[in-house]
Image 1 (tube, one colour):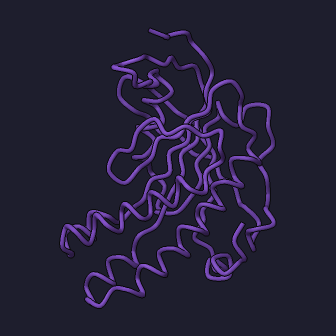
Image 2 (cartoon, one colour; image 1 turned 180 degrees about the horizontal axis):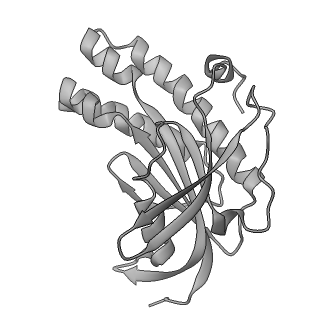
Length: 210
């Protein structure tokens, strides 16, 4: 069993709006869309990312051995966001039922990024990362940000780095705000976040594929 402690970058892309989609559509249809969108998020991820697990409509990525820079992380998040919505447009075009189409149009995506020490345990030849930072990242999926589309970066991840103001693939500057959450047992988590719901989202989605 390999349980040596190592530092890891943790990233969770989480799709919002699937509860409503599942309630308004047939199971085969909603699970088909979920599978396609999750596969697309994995497809555009950097090779360094490892998939630890898929929980419902969220993917837990992690990288050990190096701390991903904020620039690298933001580039992936924006690339994934654009590809997600491009793919969603294609999916919606195939939907004939009005209620299902309306529910699919409400789907969006947020990203939670954290950094800290983890261990990898071997369970029947499956390596599973464990540790407090992973628990903290999962807790952050429930926060006070009033949006379904954003990038959240914890203070631990941002430590020693500057927050980028823009990317070539994104038409508007990234406006970062500070936030904080208080959770039972694990306490306070401070973070920075930038909203991805901008007036130029449509333009961003039409940018040529990265």
